[in-house]
Image (tube, rainbow, N blue to C red; front, side, top):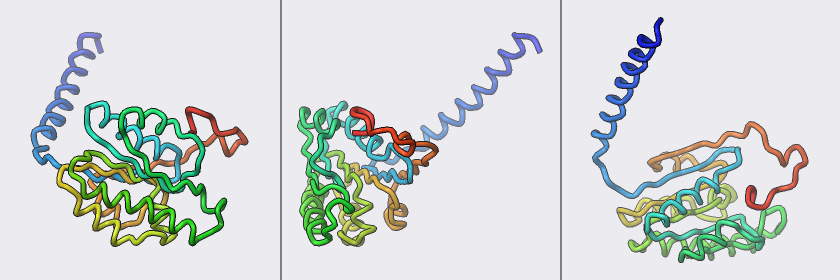
Length: 200
């Protein structure tokens, strides 16, 4: 096959692809706030959520963050986003195997969830990240029905991102977009310390 024939074949294939993409774009006529879930066993779920928050802020949208299963250690995303007016509500109790206190964890989770509920009723907030909330649902620290109802009844144009392992089926069912992050390899499992700017 000559170079010219290869080029013509490539152009024809790309034209077919363009037509398919253009058709999908033309058929996407619904404009609404999205509910997105990033779950799975791999690294990068919170990072993806914060990426969407950062993108929103970069476009001049308002955002808020609720962090579950987080301690008092420094958070690079918080360092950046608070400078741009993004409020953070953080449990500050750390991982459950560190606290070993179910009642204190439930109290801390409820306090952050109350802030989330308030934001989920506020149409002036465009994007909300509920980081690691899936753990609170798996441990039954928060009520799944209440969380689902609050998300489903939020202002029409508001975007919500949920991150964390083991996302409940009901949340996946009501989500518009669901991504599952798979774990192939992780440096920590090989004894490498967590790295500032990469892991936290």
